[in-house]
Image (tube, rainbow, N blue to C red; front, side, top):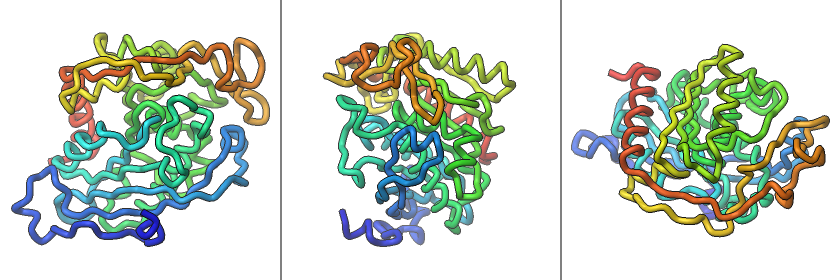
Length: 325
């Protein structure tokens, strides 16, 4: 693993000259990239303090079949790292002629999962990784810089949602680019940030399940209402019969299980206080994952029907946004 991290992108498969004979959901080329990033506390992120620990995370860039500069979807994983649910999405997008850039924000930090201990990594770190990935894509000759969309799942969905904030872009996005759209899947919307209705003038499309007891949809509905009051382009698609991680249904998963010992902030109300300190709004004390509002053992489960519906909705959205023929 370390060998390719030291490189500037390693070619795994160069099949562009034979792309005509390949299935459309197979990338014409795969490149791996080291992503220089930082590990920061959430307070450091919110206050613009870049005095964090330098770290190198990774990105897998699958260049879709097609000529010239292509659109890209950047994908950000959840609390279990890059999981099986990512693969059907990358294949779907590649089949549409859309390249994909999958970020691994955990391995370079020595992490595999953080669900049972969310304090292992400040949640806003993944936004740094996202913006640093955008810097890489901005310089790539096969990328259309005006057609890059960000998609994330759970913890990564939270990152995808809040990466849209104007303030965060000003603080941390040095790429010179802006995402063309944001697609958060079942994010945690329980935190209120200063100026969080001031988001990029780009569409935000959120997908969530009504019975989700990991990241309840209610807080997202409240946030979406505030965004709509601020005249932002945001849509929440809610599936009444779908648990957290319902898109596992794309892999044929239809069962529901307990995510053993995973921490959930489903009953927390968190707000940004002075100096970038995240506060427990109920206790008026700085928030920690030892607070009484933190609970354990939420559920996850796939739903093939709604996963298929969400895949079609996302594909239709990208078809229009990217002006695909």
